[in-house]
Length: 309
Picture 1: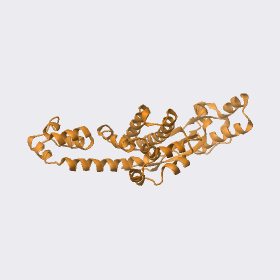
Picture 2: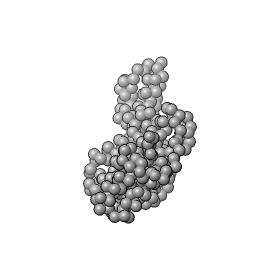
Picture 3: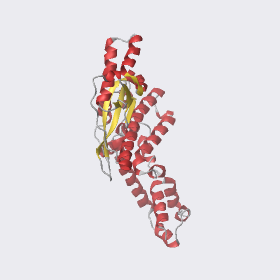
Picture 4: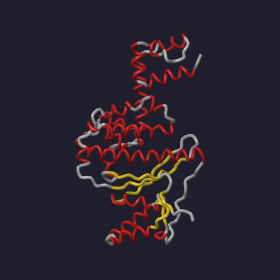
C-alpha cells in the first residue's frame, strides 16, 4: 500500500476542482493516474461526491479567512469586482496549496495581482484598475517582507536588529534601505483605506465580505479624489517561535513625491547632497525641510540605515 499515493489523491480531490468533478462522474477514471491498489481504490469509491464537495468548500473558507488577515484591503476591494469572492476561492487550488506553507500567502498574492492585472474587463476604467492594483501591490510587499523576516529567523536564528540611535551628523552620511522593508504608493492614506474597507479584522472580515461584499459604487467613490501617499513598511519579528514566528509591520507614510527620492538610499549619496540638488533646482525651504524630515523618519523607524564604514 502507498500512503503517499493515497495522500496525493485525497489532496487533489480536495483542491483540484476538475479532478473532483471527474471523480463525481467517474471515480475509476479520476483515480487512474494514482498508483493505488484495488483495495485503496475501493476505499476511495465509497466517498460521497457531495460530502467531498462540502469538505473542500469548508477548507477553502478556512484558508481564505486566514489569508484575509494578511491581505485585508485587497480582499475587500476584490469582493467589489464581478464574481470577486469566487475569484479568491478559485486561487485555493493545487498550485497554491503545494507551495511551502511559509510562502503560500505570497504565492496567492502574486497570482491574485497577476490575474487582476490581466482582467481589464473587471474594472470600470484603466484608472480604476491601476488604483486597485496599487493597494494589492502595497499589501503584497508587506506579505513578502513578513515572509522573508520569518524565513531569516527560521533558517539562521536571525534576531531583530535594534534601531540604532540617529547621529547628529546623519545628513552628511549616506543611507541605505534596511532589510525587510517595502514601499508602495497608496491612493489614500492607509488609515482611510482601513476605515473604509475593513469594518472588522482578521477572519471576521472574510465572513463579513461573504455576507456583504464591498460594492463597486463605494470603491469608485473611495478613489474619486485620490490623495496619494507613499507607504513604507518594515516587517518586525514579534514572536520568535521556531514553530510559528509572528511579525508585525512598522509603517511610515510620506508624501507622494518622496517615492522619487528612494533611489538615493543607495549607500553612497548623503542626504545633504540630495538637499543640495533640490535647492539648486529651485526647491523652497519648506520642501527641503519636508524631505529632510522624511529621511529622518525612515532612520528613526529602522527603515533606512547608515552603512558601516
